[in-house]
Image 1 (spheres, rainbow, N blue to C red):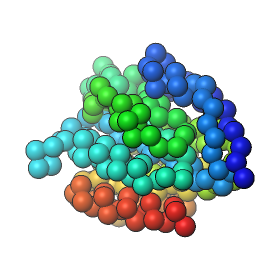
Image 2: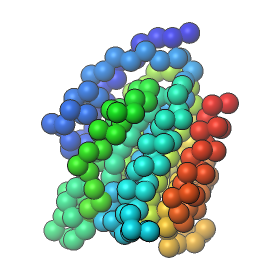
Image 3: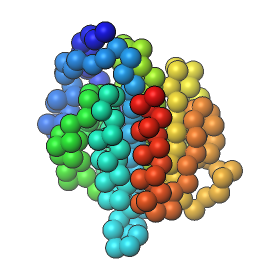
Image 4: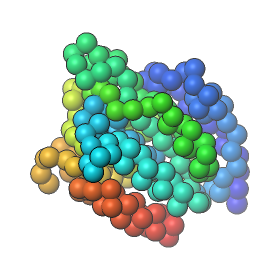
Length: 228
């Protein structure tokens, strides 16, 4: 059974109001299967993601694997958010960075060109507002009206730096029948830190990724699980 969903996702945290991607997301009619999974990818673009591994920034490596993951989600509604890409990683840019969650790709079936274009001009810059990013995912999921499972993937290389409580928000997401999985990419913390607590509160899993291939392996397995 299929039905139409009109998606009008507006949050105070999304600052990219003038972008074509936001305009498309603001009012968009998409035909989807009633039981299609809803997959939200939350990508860290904070300053630390500029660190290079093998000559390529962690942000670029993670972004490319997110592209690949999306291409495997043929029967899912996919959403993409980027956090930490505004302001700077100094105190002068903290407020802007912590309150900016960029809504680059609203819930819809995956279209490779649109997905890639949505991230043009975005790079790793500021702080790490994980709680705000998860709240944004919850706001978006709350707008949907289908019976598919709701899954959030938080890909980050560090913990919250904006004073928020991401474990609390993950708990709220779980109560709203969403699952929160966390990928710690080149994360310096251990398995008892905040990121594992977020995954536990969200009813999901914590994955440790040291390399691009680790992210690829994780996303490939998750795409298989989502297709079941």
